[in-house]
Image (cartoon, rainbow over all chains, first blue to last red; front, side, top):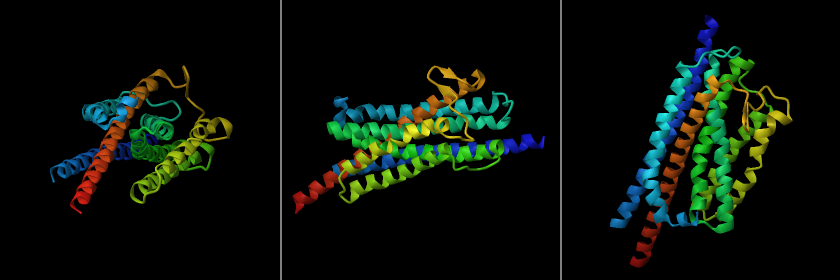
Length: 46
Length: 240
């Protein structure tokens, strides 16, 4: 029983790293893209 | 291919393809991870920790795939001077680095209960760590090319030379003794049971779509920065 619980701790840690890392990368890439495109539009209007 | 050298044509395609890749990638990856976490039976030897497979393997493939994309784009840039090829190479560096780090960290977490250690300096783990450092060096070189006026050919040549590490990573478990298992999936053959293989392949598809979406988002951001800067510089010159 203890072995099984320990194994799930490792699974949870790996999934936390993988999911948080992936979501952070996707979110940052999307926000940075929108920011850059907004800056381009502003430079067009100036 | 040369048709997409035109930024306008590229942006027309990327404007709808970027959200499509990201949303479908998120849905398919989440579905594959849920499948792997809740629907797959524990492995006879590795127990519940086998579920780390569904994150670790796609991350490893995309870490290597990212550098392969950098090398191919660098080659296109050096040979044909394709204007978007150098942007594509720079755009692949971020997701490639992130997936390499995820592969290293999840592998280390998986190693503790299965091998009894977080890390060993064997061929597979060391060559993967070298890949992470190559990504950092490439990102620094690409930024230097953008900000300090270093020739964009320098990061492109580095991208090509760094590709030597990819077959080393791939063959490391065959060439040297390793705690890491030998290749489980080769051309047309798999040593992985179908129960694990199906969600693994779905996870690879989902994370690959995400990878593609992030590369397109980075390309759009880099292109927009270049266009905004060029416009502001032109205005400043006209005003002077």
